[in-house]
Length: 306
Image 1: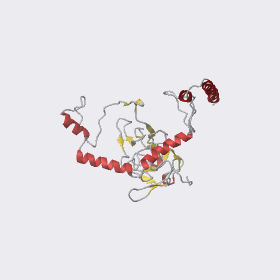
Image 2 (image 1 turned 90 degrees about the vertical axis):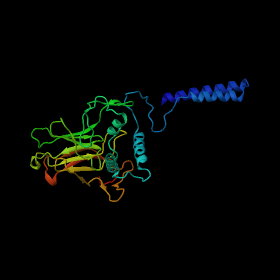
Image 3 (image 1 turned 180 degrees about the horizontal axis):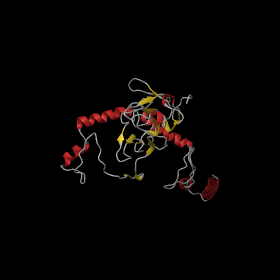
Image 4 (image 1 turned 90 degrees about the horizontal axis):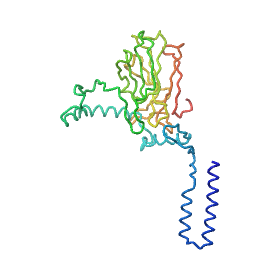
């Protein structure tokens, strides 16, 4: 800031000298005005309130103020909350159901594309498109002009302690829900696609051997809401719990609840997010069953109780 002050003082002295010179030599008002505008345009730029005056370079860590971070989060929330003032809790689930209905009534894009062009995409002639299985066409990064070559974020991993082989693993994708493998990662199955949220923040499993059932852990605790502070980190709907290895899920109402009606609403409300971001869940290994004790790191709910 001292550099800015010195620059302003020099500019003011130069401006005053120019005015004196113009007055003594009877230079026209328009010429003097042009000179003033040129000087003003060359003054050093002082950062606005809340902005950092540090230069930013590509690939360098950005030193954003707390105000800027909060304003970005509010912008992200409010444009999605308009005009209701909140984001309906079941908006993602309704979109999922609508997409499934479109696939049933209008078919798949790959089928329509092949019919329109009269040929399959080169290299994939043997792939049969359907809604129940996936065919690997990678691994291959996602090419982005902004981020470069990137892959999807995996925010959580948990190994099932009740599988003696160690081959049962649960993975939480940033915006893809929980995926499960029972063969050490050779194949994966999505197990939360029809849940209120598939934004992953954390996964924890019941570590107590006494709670093991049918070769899987007694409980999977899925903390929704990605707490990574990225512009595409989405809020969640609280903690989801499965007692049958991910086949079925129930929603815990400790942090937020879903009200009935259409659209349903997450409560309590937060001024910056429609639901919480649960970054970490830990299970007390000395507890078991229905009396199990958990510790959660939660952001994005406004209730003073939490």
